[in-house]
Length: 242
Image (cartoon, helix red, strand yellow):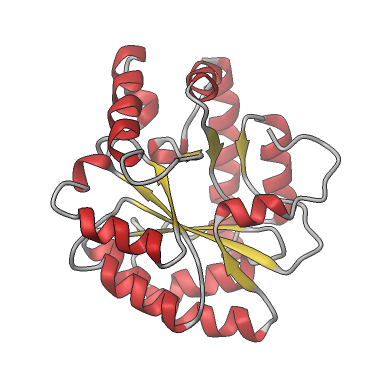
């Protein structure tokens, strides 16, 4: 509980700064990463790379539109999929892998992981794992709603997963305004940043519009938009990121 309390206070501070400045300061991202070790928030790199992560899909209506925009800009992403949404979308998941993207585990249902009992948490992780590994080896996991504790991290580690959160987050599910989301991403981007966007329903429609705005500008600034695994390969830090 103390870990959750400490993380909660830090996140509340981050949200306050976000509302005041429009983005979370990089120094605060590093403070959170250093004080709440166990999940990847960003990467120290000399390359102008930004990892794009997209949560909550797949969606047969919005995911193809997202893939189209990514292809137009030669950009890659890590899709954190909810496994209960994969059924009937098998060809879509296969397509995004074929087009150079990667998939991550976002559990079996859209719910806050921290509210689950240990048994429910483990069962949801394993259920998603069994579905997703039918398509590819899955390295990354992202807890629902972004909360985690030491117990959850031990389960991730025991199942061969690396936990990933992010450093650039516009609260797009709560504030689904393309202009706002785009401003936050462009203001917060830096080499090694991890951007969090969302798919599924209105969130996916918002992300399509956001990508059309941010991808050309990020590339104009010299950034390459890559998967989490590609970004992790560029890590130049001597300290552990986990």
